[in-house]
Image 1 (cartoon, rainbow, N blue to C red):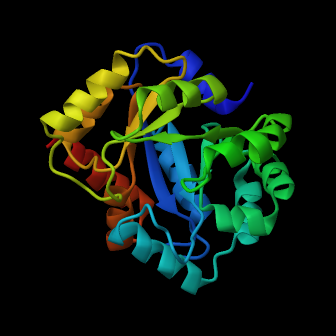
Image 2 (image 1 turned 90 degrees about the vertical axis):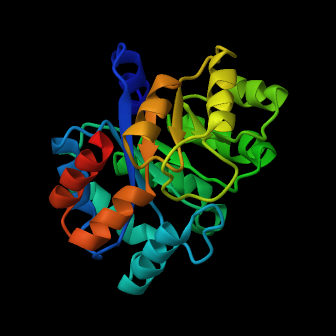
Length: 258
């Protein structure tokens, strides 16, 4: 069974925590260390960013991380090599997050095949049109039992959400706002209303809420209205500051308790 499915099937009532970091940042050879450390420290799922020169959905923190990773020499081929080196050690789901240009240039079939060979359970491609997903990407991904995770925002219509829900597996990535990624201090009433509205739709797929989670208030709000939370910018900032995944996760847990 796909590891994403296993995680959600076996979690019971436990709320999940997923972290994002950009491969190749802060160091070119640190990807494996970050992954194994986060697994040891109790993180449930990891999103590994594929650096790209024009990350439209990302805020300044992740944009800067991607730029640094590219300067360090990170490529998708190198990332797959690094993931293969720790494949036998990793038990939690790994998800690659990257833009369509990189995946298409690499080749969809080759990308899906190497995901499976590297222990990757899913992929998030924020700028992948849903029509192209259905016609081109999904048939290939399904052959490799790879989950393509789709995003929804507060502006996504109920009809569209139900269509996405019926044609995807794994989980739905609920973006907390229509803006770019970045830490926020709280989720206002409008965002809370969005969370509750989607919760009330009783979708087939579990949901994870991401974008803006950086403290106890935003974490608890996300976890109260979904299967769990995804943290990106806050952890990337801490990782860049400390250059140590262990220290960064210590500081993240402290921030999430405040």
